[in-house]
Length: 219
Image (cartoon, rainbow, N blue to C red; front, top):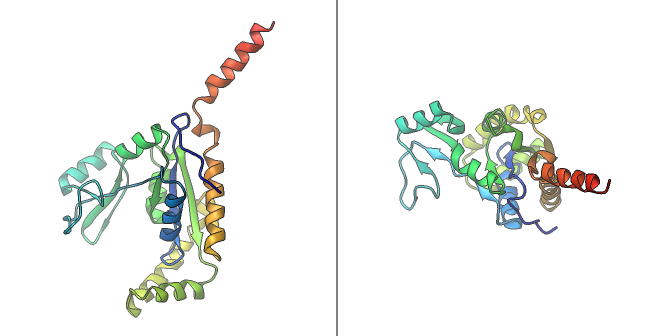
Protein backbone atom coordinates (compact mmCIF):
# COMPACT_ATOMS: atom_id res chain seq x y z
CA UNK A 1 0.00 0.00 0.00
CA UNK A 2 1.44 3.35 -1.02
CA UNK A 3 0.95 6.31 1.28
CA UNK A 4 -1.54 8.99 0.20
CA UNK A 5 0.02 12.42 0.11
CA UNK A 6 -0.74 14.76 3.01
CA UNK A 7 -2.45 17.97 2.01
CA UNK A 8 -3.50 21.14 3.79
CA UNK A 9 -7.04 20.45 2.50
CA UNK A 10 -7.38 18.20 5.54
CA UNK A 11 -6.30 18.58 9.14
CA UNK A 12 -3.46 16.39 10.38
CA UNK A 13 -3.78 13.60 12.93
CA UNK A 14 -1.97 13.08 16.21
CA UNK A 15 -1.09 9.40 15.84
CA UNK A 16 -0.37 7.79 19.21
CA UNK A 17 1.42 4.43 19.31
CA UNK A 18 1.72 2.71 22.69
CA UNK A 19 2.71 -0.77 23.84
CA UNK A 20 4.64 -2.62 26.51
CA UNK A 21 8.38 -2.66 25.85
CA UNK A 22 9.21 -5.37 23.31
CA UNK A 23 5.84 -5.48 21.53
CA UNK A 24 7.21 -3.74 18.42
CA UNK A 25 5.94 -0.17 18.79
CA UNK A 26 9.19 1.59 17.85
CA UNK A 27 9.82 -0.69 14.87
CA UNK A 28 6.30 -0.05 13.58
CA UNK A 29 6.75 3.70 14.07
CA UNK A 30 9.90 3.62 11.92
CA UNK A 31 8.13 1.61 9.23
CA UNK A 32 5.19 4.00 9.23
CA UNK A 33 7.52 6.97 8.70
CA UNK A 34 9.31 5.14 5.88
CA UNK A 35 5.92 4.46 4.27
CA UNK A 36 5.00 8.14 4.48
CA UNK A 37 7.99 10.51 4.83
CA UNK A 38 5.59 13.45 5.28
CA UNK A 39 4.83 12.18 8.79
CA UNK A 40 6.34 14.39 11.48
CA UNK A 41 7.79 12.67 14.55
CA UNK A 42 6.99 14.54 17.74
CA UNK A 43 10.16 16.01 19.27
CA UNK A 44 9.94 16.04 23.07
CA UNK A 45 11.11 18.76 25.41
CA UNK A 46 13.28 17.87 28.40
CA UNK A 47 15.06 19.49 31.32
CA UNK A 48 18.01 17.11 31.16
CA UNK A 49 21.29 18.42 29.79
CA UNK A 50 22.08 17.83 26.12
CA UNK A 51 24.49 14.99 25.48
CA UNK A 52 27.40 15.18 23.07
CA UNK A 53 26.13 15.34 19.50
CA UNK A 54 22.56 16.29 20.44
CA UNK A 55 21.02 19.43 18.93
CA UNK A 56 18.23 21.57 20.33
CA UNK A 57 15.08 20.96 18.29
CA UNK A 58 16.37 17.74 16.72
CA UNK A 59 16.71 15.06 19.41
CA UNK A 60 14.95 17.20 22.04
CA UNK A 61 13.99 20.74 22.90
CA UNK A 62 16.30 21.39 25.85
CA UNK A 63 14.60 23.62 28.42
CA UNK A 64 15.37 24.87 31.91
CA UNK A 65 13.11 23.51 34.65
CA UNK A 66 11.59 26.96 35.11
CA UNK A 67 10.99 27.34 31.39
CA UNK A 68 9.45 23.88 31.19
CA UNK A 69 7.17 24.49 34.16
CA UNK A 70 6.08 27.82 32.66
CA UNK A 71 5.10 26.00 29.45
CA UNK A 72 3.02 23.53 31.47
CA UNK A 73 1.32 26.38 33.35
CA UNK A 74 0.43 28.11 30.06
CA UNK A 75 -1.01 24.91 28.59
CA UNK A 76 1.82 24.68 26.06
CA UNK A 77 2.55 21.00 26.81
CA UNK A 78 0.24 18.33 25.42
CA UNK A 79 1.62 15.83 27.93
CA UNK A 80 4.44 15.72 30.43
CA UNK A 81 5.98 13.55 33.13
CA UNK A 82 8.96 13.48 35.46
CA UNK A 83 11.44 10.64 34.93
CA UNK A 84 14.55 10.24 37.11
CA UNK A 85 14.41 13.89 38.28
CA UNK A 86 14.06 15.28 34.76
CA UNK A 87 10.91 16.58 33.07
CA UNK A 88 9.85 15.35 29.63
CA UNK A 89 6.92 16.48 27.53
CA UNK A 90 5.43 17.18 24.09
CA UNK A 91 5.30 20.90 23.18
CA UNK A 92 1.94 21.95 21.76
CA UNK A 93 3.18 24.61 19.31
CA UNK A 94 5.05 22.49 16.71
CA UNK A 95 2.34 19.81 16.81
CA UNK A 96 -0.49 22.30 16.31
CA UNK A 97 1.37 23.99 13.43
CA UNK A 98 1.93 20.63 11.72
CA UNK A 99 -1.66 19.40 11.92
CA UNK A 100 -3.02 22.77 10.77
CA UNK A 101 -0.74 22.36 7.74
CA UNK A 102 -2.23 18.94 7.01
CA UNK A 103 0.69 16.92 8.39
CA UNK A 104 0.23 13.99 10.74
CA UNK A 105 2.37 13.87 13.88
CA UNK A 106 3.52 10.53 15.28
CA UNK A 107 3.92 9.93 19.03
CA UNK A 108 5.81 6.90 20.36
CA UNK A 109 4.70 7.20 24.00
CA UNK A 110 3.35 5.23 26.95
CA UNK A 111 -0.31 5.02 28.02
CA UNK A 112 0.03 7.93 30.47
CA UNK A 113 1.29 10.31 27.78
CA UNK A 114 -1.36 9.05 25.38
CA UNK A 115 -4.07 9.67 27.95
CA UNK A 116 -2.93 13.26 28.49
CA UNK A 117 -2.85 13.97 24.75
CA UNK A 118 -6.35 12.52 24.25
CA UNK A 119 -7.58 14.81 27.04
CA UNK A 120 -5.77 17.88 25.65
CA UNK A 121 -7.15 20.72 23.54
CA UNK A 122 -6.12 18.75 20.43
CA UNK A 123 -7.75 15.55 21.65
CA UNK A 124 -10.40 15.43 18.92
CA UNK A 125 -7.64 14.98 16.33
CA UNK A 126 -5.97 11.98 17.96
CA UNK A 127 -5.75 8.48 16.57
CA UNK A 128 -4.61 6.10 19.30
CA UNK A 129 -3.34 2.58 18.62
CA UNK A 130 -2.15 0.05 21.19
CA UNK A 131 0.19 -2.77 20.17
CA UNK A 132 -0.11 -6.09 22.00
CA UNK A 133 2.33 -9.02 21.88
CA UNK A 134 0.88 -12.40 20.82
CA UNK A 135 1.91 -13.89 24.19
CA UNK A 136 3.86 -13.01 27.32
CA UNK A 137 6.43 -15.70 26.47
CA UNK A 138 6.99 -14.07 23.07
CA UNK A 139 7.27 -10.65 24.71
CA UNK A 140 10.07 -11.91 26.95
CA UNK A 141 11.76 -13.66 24.02
CA UNK A 142 11.84 -10.40 22.06
CA UNK A 143 13.25 -8.47 25.01
CA UNK A 144 16.01 -11.04 25.49
CA UNK A 145 16.64 -11.17 21.74
CA UNK A 146 17.68 -7.53 21.74
CA UNK A 147 20.76 -8.42 23.75
CA UNK A 148 20.75 -4.93 25.29
CA UNK A 149 19.44 -5.42 28.82
CA UNK A 150 20.44 -7.33 31.93
CA UNK A 151 18.19 -9.99 33.47
CA UNK A 152 17.27 -7.48 36.17
CA UNK A 153 16.18 -4.85 33.63
CA UNK A 154 14.21 -7.42 31.61
CA UNK A 155 12.48 -8.62 34.78
CA UNK A 156 11.49 -5.03 35.57
CA UNK A 157 10.13 -4.49 32.07
CA UNK A 158 8.11 -7.70 32.26
CA UNK A 159 6.54 -6.67 35.57
CA UNK A 160 5.69 -3.24 34.19
CA UNK A 161 4.13 -4.72 31.05
CA UNK A 162 1.14 -6.14 32.93
CA UNK A 163 0.05 -2.68 34.05
CA UNK A 164 0.70 -1.24 30.59
CA UNK A 165 -1.37 -3.92 28.87
CA UNK A 166 -4.29 -3.25 31.24
CA UNK A 167 -4.87 0.10 29.49
CA UNK A 168 -5.68 -1.40 26.09
CA UNK A 169 -9.43 -0.53 26.24
CA UNK A 170 -8.60 3.19 26.30
CA UNK A 171 -7.36 3.14 22.69
CA UNK A 172 -9.20 3.57 19.38
CA UNK A 173 -7.55 0.48 17.89
CA UNK A 174 -5.67 -2.51 19.30
CA UNK A 175 -3.38 -4.62 17.12
CA UNK A 176 -1.82 -7.94 18.09
CA UNK A 177 1.68 -7.93 16.64
CA UNK A 178 1.97 -11.62 15.84
CA UNK A 179 3.49 -10.94 12.41
CA UNK A 180 5.36 -7.66 11.90
CA UNK A 181 4.63 -7.30 8.17
CA UNK A 182 0.91 -8.00 8.59
CA UNK A 183 0.68 -5.66 11.57
CA UNK A 184 2.37 -2.95 9.51
CA UNK A 185 -0.23 -3.36 6.75
CA UNK A 186 -3.09 -3.17 9.25
CA UNK A 187 -1.55 -0.06 10.78
CA UNK A 188 -1.26 1.65 7.39
CA UNK A 189 -4.88 0.77 6.59
CA UNK A 190 -6.03 2.38 9.86
CA UNK A 191 -4.08 5.58 9.20
CA UNK A 192 -5.34 5.81 5.60
CA UNK A 193 -8.97 5.44 6.72
CA UNK A 194 -8.69 7.84 9.67
CA UNK A 195 -7.30 10.56 7.43
CA UNK A 196 -10.74 10.62 5.81
CA UNK A 197 -12.55 11.11 9.14
CA UNK A 198 -15.01 13.99 8.82
CA UNK A 199 -13.40 15.92 11.70
CA UNK A 200 -10.15 15.95 9.70
CA UNK A 201 -11.74 17.53 6.61
CA UNK A 202 -12.64 21.14 7.44
CA UNK A 203 -13.17 21.90 3.76
CA UNK A 204 -16.19 19.56 3.58
CA UNK A 205 -18.61 22.29 4.71
CA UNK A 206 -17.53 24.44 1.76
CA UNK A 207 -17.96 21.52 -0.66
CA UNK A 208 -21.48 20.79 0.58
CA UNK A 209 -22.36 24.51 0.49
CA UNK A 210 -21.28 24.65 -3.16
CA UNK A 211 -23.37 21.55 -3.93
CA UNK A 212 -26.42 23.17 -2.33
CA UNK A 213 -25.75 26.35 -4.30
CA UNK A 214 -25.85 24.28 -7.49
CA UNK A 215 -29.20 22.80 -6.46
CA UNK A 216 -30.58 26.31 -5.88
CA UNK A 217 -29.23 27.53 -9.23
CA UNK A 218 -31.11 24.73 -11.02
CA UNK A 219 -34.48 25.74 -9.61
